[in-house]
Image (cartoon, rainbow, N blue to C red; front, side):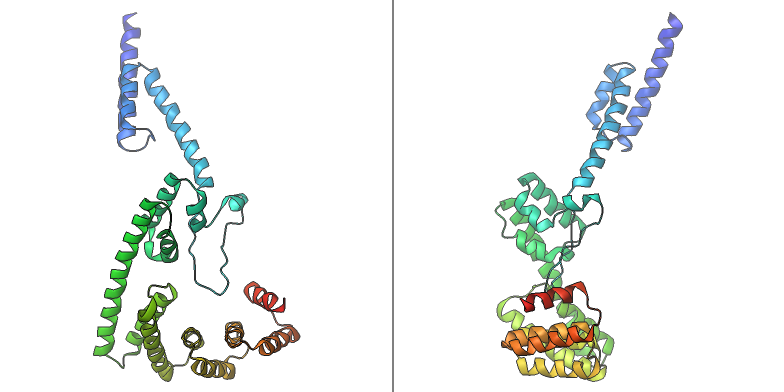
Length: 295
């Protein structure tokens, strides 16, 4: 009988040691206070902790499948939310919708996930979260936006100083215009501040185009002038693109936006007719735009 007792003690000591090491190293997915169970219930205490560990791991795996997926929202003419093509597609919703449909605890979990991930990539979401009914969500979102705004202002000042020091450096000009445009696209500026920076962007991008002409720069110039309602400048940029890249889909879609802003329905129909007669391949986005204007 003595040897049985000694064996049980040794086994208990080994199990308690393994359990303790597993919990403190994070290998076992249970809280530290569960060690009491291991020490108070010989043999079965540690066994129960291992059973609980596997149960929690399986539960967490199931929750990961159902967790709201965080999506990066980009500013486009028509916003499409890309979701996985697998079985979980039907269970995936945009995070800004999750702020409405989820519980307070889940909403706060989502906002914390965004803050711990890369807040700068979720600016539009944070802006929407700032208008949420949940005061804690609003607090986190506004605080994050303030910090992002500070960093953005600092970066813009730094780039402006670098540009003033080297106005003929193409690389500096390219970095400056790229960052300024990203700020404008993300609605980081409002009111008169936005207008001033859009005018600054037009000046900078025109200088860049005088050095090197690219489709992407013409597209951003035309869109910027369109948003400023400088229709003559926008028309000039579109004309330049029409001479160099008449078949580019991005140019054609921007033409439709320009004609729509001016209320030129006949021109929109002309562009759509030309596209349909050409039998050229067009993207899903372009087909949606054409379908919208044909209604």
